[in-house]
Length: 133
Image (cartoon, rainbow, N blue to C red; front, side):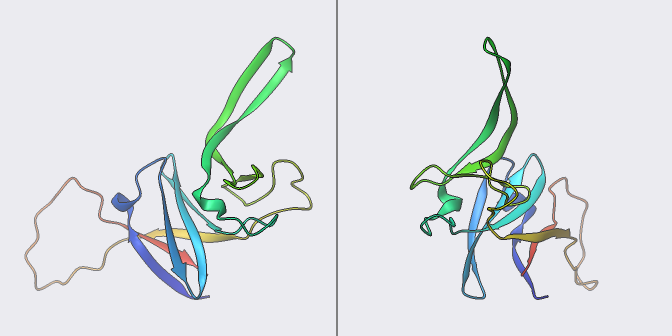
């Protein structure tokens, strides 16, 4: 499994995404409340640019008069035709057992530092966002 550094943690703040090209594939890397996920940037419906869509939540109802928004920022809606997918695992919201978009493992790894360079403590996160394709 190849590893690709796509940026630093600070490059993708919570609620944001970064779209990268890795091994000929367009992949969206998302920061959902501090946890990183990666999805293929291609909707299975008609190959629309899925990762350019809006990040939403799930609207659920316990009855007709009580609506609740859950999983805010975890659902992506394709900008072409509105198909929705779970950013955390790539599964379709409409048909999660049969339809999904490819998801990729993402890890946060510490920066490698040159020991010959004098450094000072800082408060900025210095991790790297790495996608495993």
